[in-house]
Image 1 (cartoon, rainbow, N blue to C red):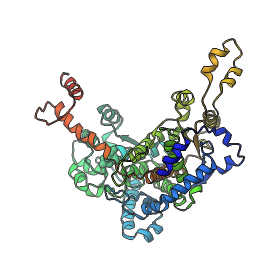
Image 2 (cartoon, helix red, strand yellow):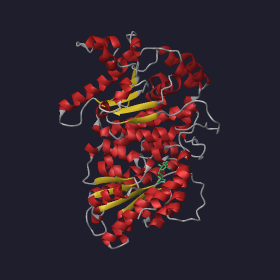
Image 3 (spheres, rainbow, N blue to C red):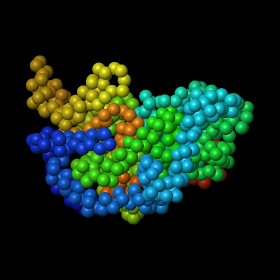
Image 4 (cartoon, rainbow, N blue to C red):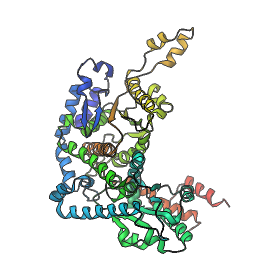
Length: 533
Ligand code: F6P
């Protein structure tokens, strides 16, 4: 990182205008790359050719190629938990996987077969419920990595739902969330999938217990759980103790991190909605991106470029956030999904060796559907003092019969990236105003511009393109973690809150014996709870 620190110092006085970079007539075509049917246009970034080349050289010198190979070949790159990071092999076609990974490949194949059989039998009505009915609904219970991947893919691919099953997800431990779901469901026709790698996550277990009580109450038999419930977990013992049947427990391997697990049996609720064939296409799209990531030179490598440009913005230009703006309604969950995979992976300040690092890591990721964002937080992006880089994501083809809507959507997307880059000078603002208010209003209409952005174009929303898009960001995050020298695959930061919440719960139950060193603030809040009737 010395290299980055050095250029960050040199660049502190830098006043480069992105628009001027377009004096280079080849910029728009040269600063774009295609892979796995996606196109990344990064020409609106605030970086010139020389700077980009220097970054590539730095990435090479930082042994990025060998770090990429290490991950794909199964080295224990998650060093604090001594685990391999191999979600990518779940996307490799079976024949190739057999050659590369032998015994492990067989294990994966068995899990895939088990999952495909469940999807086939449930969707074709061959697996019946406890009372002999055909399933109509699926309720998947899980949180964090055991939720977001399913959530984003399920909503992105809703037009590809090819079974008659309605899939519902339950993550928040709020009783209202549980009640809302259960009000819609019939215990006789609902299949439940509990997704929890550890099978110890408090929110998931409480939700699962409540749904279990509801179902046993409605069907008056505990046997319903054995028949209608499935689990995806690495803790078979705990899942069995919960009441699940062994055959209904699908594996979650320790070499697949929660937030990268949608490609495993965690994808069961998704496959139950879109069917086995679409689920395979979804993995194929991701595999295309994997191949590109492993094979393309860095200057043509989409995940590497995305990562390096993010590092440039974060560590050289010192921009602390990233707005993710999918214009497609289908991709509306994408910002929330990215928040998890990006910030839970790279929100760290200690190197792999356990040393404090002096550079910043993950930006604050936020966003929502682009056009809605335009009428909300994008005001800040246009006119506050801070620069907020953005990723625009849009498909060329719409996925509804309302063609005009898609044209407007695409126009808005392109216009916003242009507006953020160009801004409006005071002179331009004044020239636009014809009345006497010219001088008082013009200042309000000035827009700073010079905000860098990427635009990612999908040809259309499809299982393959959504798979490729998700894999693109997974790899971007990996590259950034590798260059920041942090472990992107652990999440110790969430542990303290979990531990303290048990203490708080005990105090809320008036258990005065509870040892605690809670602050007066928290004790007061707990007291407020204990005083309500
Ligand atoms: O947020 C912390 C975390 O441990 C994630 O890494 C994980 O995806 C999530 O909680 C849920 O964990 P589990 O799958 O074990 O229930």
